[in-house]
Length: 302
Image (tube, rainbow, N blue to C red):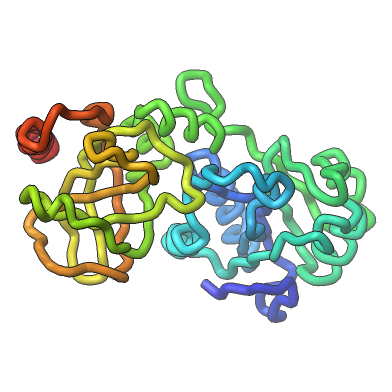
């Protein structure tokens, strides 16, 4: 998969099939769009790629929105590689780009730069200055700019349309099992291990600490997890919260990895959430906390 940080595509990637969107989470609905677009590309022996935006437009326009993402850009790239695209275009979403009119977006990017022949979007796709462009706009300019706009039917589960918003709600409520089903994989938080106060080590349960960054915040509490790094894959338990027993003030993800007891500072790890075990709570003292952690570990190992 060739990754572009510009819309100046190589000739071999022009005149193909393109899907456009944020693809936050790359859930089953997104995967449906991608598989249908890939099928079209294969049928006509055309290149297939995706155009996405960084940062996500909703976070660019509203700086108060911080904990929102289902996947980081790094995760999105890795997930898309597995779907075997020919190319990925990451458009830097900034003030200049947000001021492009819908017609100029179609004319200058879709037509002149990509020479796209088949364009896949969701039915609620908005683009261009003040989000004035819609699927109707794309339809209106089809013949002028020689592309075919295709809107895939939304993916539904139990009569509910699957969306990134719906999955965020599931994660926030602690329904991680259902969120994982809709993502078709374990939802995860990836990041560099940072130094903590070593309280976990002192009570016999060393942890790797991660900042939550811009990820959506799951229900606070303890989860059974699987942790992956460049040199290992292990099960573990993770606590996401403020550590009320220690009067903590900062939100952290702390993970106790089973069978690993070495310094992982500055190493990148991927914490994959399997199931919610219990809410975060304040314990009377360290002995009560230690007893509960032992119980949590037994449940996580089941």
